[in-house]
Image (cartoon, rainbow, N blue to C red; front, side, top):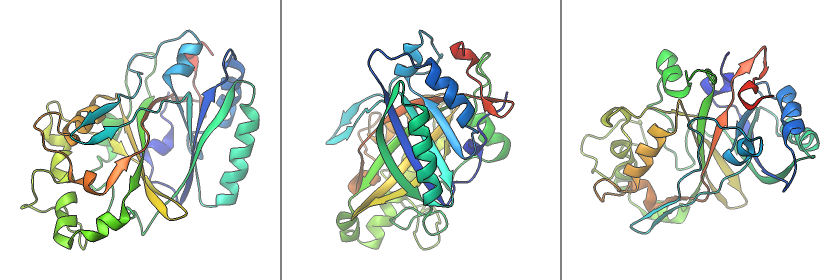
Length: 290
């Protein structure tokens, strides 16, 4: 079995994130069989939530609900969904038509919930101008970080998804030094700052500083709607453990130091999904009895 290939590929020029909820009392088996034929793991990446797996009377070891947390004026919401789809491409019109086809294919048991359009900005920068994903593991290290080798679900991945809303006026009110120290890198050349405070995001989430090391593969993309915008944070892991370790440190659960990013951005959503592997180019749902 192989992983959905887009997990290990660069982000696309355009994307659309979809979530669905389960219609009460509906049997999702037929919808999942239809989904199996639609998802190639390249143009469409699929993640199944705990409620959808549970509706089939099945269990995927390691799949759980995103933890709601709060600390020092910071709220980390939990907004679970039954199904998450990441549509990838270069043409928003194509993504729209693909979205409509998926809605029709899943209409028996799954109802549309949220839609977020995202895009690549300035060759891989966040809307604040900072490069995103600099410390992503690569090649074999990326596979080890993002892809599960558990018997029965080998080739699958666990993804944490959050939509973050940026406070652009608040960010722009900070001096350049304060902005750089919040992130821990110089925006001008992406160099890590040795003199950045302990609250700097780079220091809070240094993946090798955890025990065990907390590596994830980030495939985040900016989003914008009207005058609002931010980042769809997307972290793939062999489990949720590495992501949770990073999030706990960001909110200061260990030492009371909160991540500098919270000075100008906050999460609106938070959800966990299991991304099944592929077999012969289609989703392998054997672990769900399908």
